[in-house]
Image 1 (cartoon, rainbow, N blue to C red):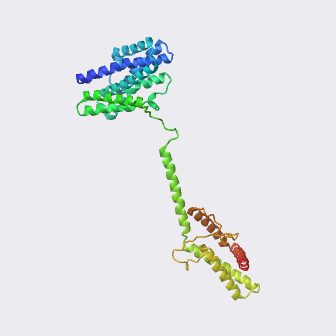
Image 2 (cartoon, rainbow, N blue to C red):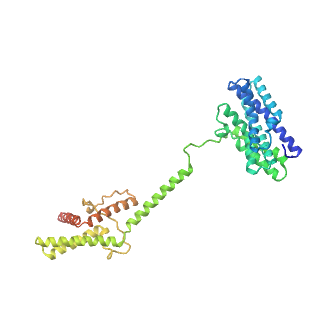
Image 3 (cartoon, rainbow, N blue to C red):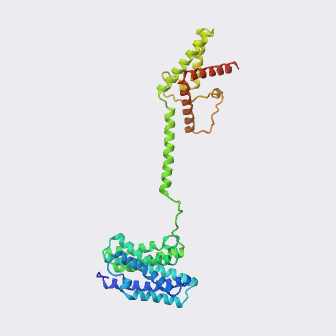
Length: 368
């Protein structure tokens, strides 16, 4: 390291590094044995496990030669771990516990040493934490990749990144207050404690379902709410019609009735009788269909409700509309009926036919 550090910090840094290299070399060699590799595989997997994280860190820092290459003891210790694993078969429940605890200890130590090296080279806060995490987990990621496994740090396994971040944060905080040596002891202890708690408590960082996308889901929900609000607003607008439309409908009906009066006079009906019948029809019709009520005589605040039923069912004593329809569905139906009525009233021939049919139905009903 090209930057001067306190001798105590320097010693802690070095012992943490070398002890972790030997232990990870043994773990890597044991994994190579379980995968059925030869001695070359033992050496390579041990080297990747024990030196991979430090190599990633030093390459990213880009200050001088990678430590694992410039200091031969690193390679010697890594290969020593591989040889130990070659001659001693670590297996069973005891080895699983040793491996898990060894990973936890090494991860905590290397998270601290990686952060210290980043601090020594003057890296900003976030890169310092990244260097601690890469040093702690980089070797295991490379080891898992070369042995054909999904890196454990990618989820669904015992947490390793979070403890490493905790260690790096403690080292940074202690350096800020001037007690880095204490931070280099406390940081790994906290990291190891978190890792072991995760191991014994069965903590896992589970991956979400691949379809899980809260932003997309929220956007869909907002779209539904907006559509519902728009439909409700349109329904209210349809119920509150401009007075000119209602007056136009009333005038169209009056003109149609006037034509009917003239037609009845030509067939022998007296004008007084024809006009009286037309007035009764108009009164009856507008009382049934407020959408045709003259706005000039309409009560203030009266809102149109009914539309038109050409089959005549609207004039029955009992309503035929479904009782479970929502307010918006009623408004939609009424709006459709008014549109149909407006189309008829715009055509004199259709209007006359409508009046004739309704007048006939009124007469049949009154004669019952």
